[in-house]
Image (cartoon, rainbow, N blue to C red):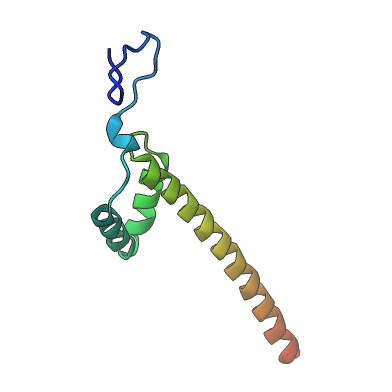
Length: 95
């Protein structure tokens, strides 16, 4: 087997990687990805598929994992703010 980049022979035990996974994402692909992220419900499903699927471009996979972390942090902050607001309202109303 030959290396798709340099043409040298690869050892038998060499890991065979899909060249499609290593290609840089273009503007059109990112534009389509961002449009899909605007659809409620679909965006979360696609993020988890892209983050944990094995046959996804590395760029998109890393981006999806980062987006999931950001969503989790934002949700934690919103939950904390909610409980702070409820506590303040209870104090103001004498509860």
